[in-house]
Length: 200
Image 1: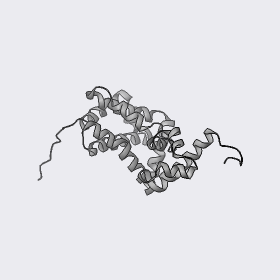
Image 2: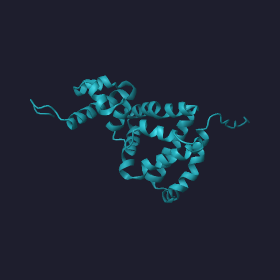
Image 3: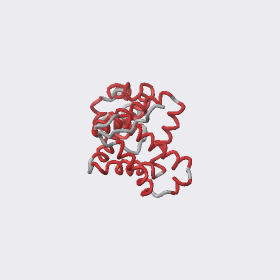
Image 4: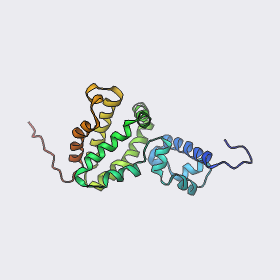
């Protein structure tokens, strides 16, 4: 904490804001926490918070120590040839999980979300607003398809990086892309008619 009579520096102010954000997000979820409320908790003007972090989404990513801001990653996945979006998605995902320091925050949140309903709510709301809704709207597909891809990617990551299932752990990234990119492409392509299983 800053000493009396001394104005806190930028680094100290950023840390105070991040700590306030962590508390608000944990207590109120991603939707419930507001920039104005976080700024009030940190004892700063909301304009200063915007100056440091830009958006609520970026503030969340930094307060949770995420290695990437979806606001920057999602556009990179969406931009480019439409018939390569599945590959871009898978390669971006693999890039996030490749380094131990990159995947550590994701693993910590996954573990927490399985035992803490507040964390689960916070992550569910964040993924819905920052990732699923944006990709679904941009691609013109139902959000359930994007959620399906997210579930498949996370399940793959747990088997490859956490459990260390030998075939997946030993596979090259190109092999993984060859397996998963066509599936991602399928679900992210508008007007794909899914086969209906006849009722017996």
